[in-house]
Length: 320
Image 1 (cartoon, rainbow, N blue to C red):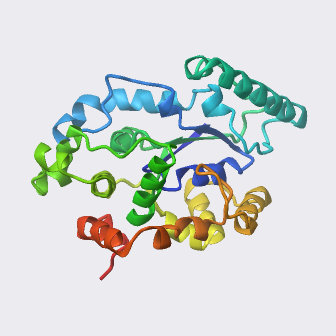
Image 2: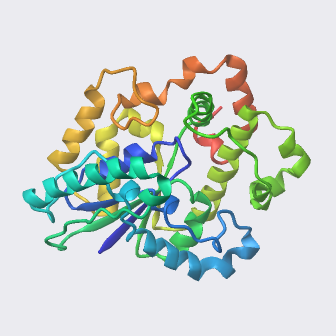
């Protein structure tokens, strides 16, 4: 079975991109299995010196992600029709998922992680497994290096969009406030810039978000630049032209662009509800991508630019 991995920082469009892949009738999709399957002996951030030590462990962990079936990973709407799942099994899976999600909410997170949602597969021919991760961008290089037969998609979003979404989410209590971690100092970008623990401790919330965006995205781009099985996707470009960008990406992944995928994209493009939930998947993509332009002050935008613009990741968005 072909395997595809989607990576990106939180609030970079990974969930929407994952749902686009899920809309394909041949894919079997896992939502953030790295949040359910833990390996305490596989760090999230590596120095170059540590890479050889963890290659094999990262390979085994990456393959296990495709088998995670807890309700959070395998029981989330929207539910798309699949070529490998007849209509009766499709509706049975939807019913099972909603019942499992309801029970999980009552029982609590610890129990919910043990509730399994079966795949209800009748025919495995032509199936493609897709995993979406946001907790492990630092592990992407290890996994892609040791799994050259797999495709890895890395999505990057404008830094102002990501930082703004982190700040708004923290204000609403949807996510925890951005934090600076000592492990960041292992990253080459931090070493080159002479960052130390004292510098991290003095950062504001906006600066923490900006440095997190810079260090993680820059590290992925630098380390994977020579890997043929890694593809960069610009979230802002995808929002401007979802159909053609999806076609290009699907072609690279060996998937056809079909009417079910087109229908999901059209639903995204036609949705006019501006009061979307923080985690909403279906919303007008260009509007969602550009909220930061009115929600951030000019001073905040300038400070983010000052931090990230000279990096390889920043140059994608700041050409001048």
